[in-house]
Structure formats: C-alpha cells, structure tokens
Length: 148
Image 1 (cartoon, rainbow, N blue to C red):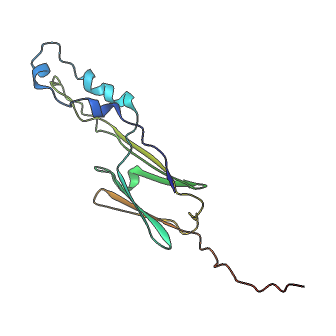
Image 2 (image 1 turned 90 degrees about the horizontal axis):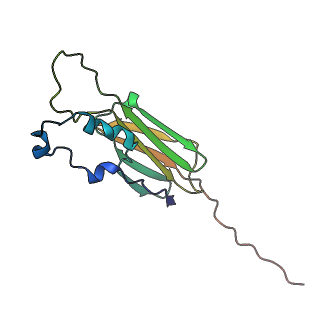
Image 3 (image 1 turned 120 degrees about the vertical axis):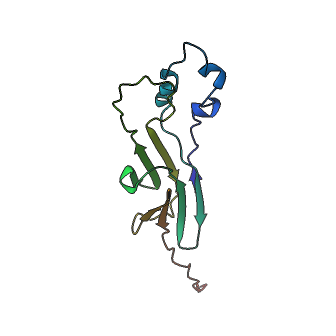
C-alpha cells in the first residue's frame, strides 16, 4: 500500500489570531478570508490493515454525513468533505472573523489488494470509518511434477 503524500496547508504557518494586529486600525477580516484560497485540508487518518480488510479512520470535525463524499477509483480511495459557513446578514461591523468554509480532501492508494466490492463507510462523532475489503488470494497449490 502506498500513501499519497499530504499537501501541506499554508494554514500551518499562520497564527489564527494575533492580538497585537487586532489592535491595529487597519485590521481587516479579509486577512482571515484569504485562507479560503489555500485549498482543501488533508484530514488526519489512521489506517489499519487486517487480514481481510483495510480500516481507515479520518477526522472530519464539524461535518455531517451529508457533507461527505467517499469514492474509490481503481485502487485510490478519495475522501472529500465541505462545510459552508452560515451567512449572517447583520447590520453590525465585523471586528474579527476566523470562521470560514472548510474543505477536506484526502486520497489514499490502497494497492492492488483493495477490492471495490463491499466497501462500507460509517460516520460517527466527527470520525469517518471506511472499511475496504481485501481481495482474497487463493493459496498456492503444491503439485508433483513427474520427471521423465
């Protein structure tokens, strides 16, 4: 099994709230909105290989099962999720804005043993669990070859 490398997010280098900048008169909520252009975040995953299946747990905090799309293309399992922030139509001035639309995307190459038949997914308390059955290989037969 080969894992497809995570794309580092630009968010890892940004402190979400810098108090000294908050006090500056030119503070703008647009600074936080620039996070949207960083692209989707790769969710953290745990992968467990059993004799008959791969078990993949992915952290998707704040999502519901309707926000999640799981697909298998050949040997590549793809997990996508998107949460759109509620739009508030208030007449007040935004002083600070950190909440934004959240997108997750992660692809995992599970290798040739992964079977597309019988894949299941369950979502509970922010954790997606995907079970991907493995192709059952027939044991090699030992045969006797007569020598002439």
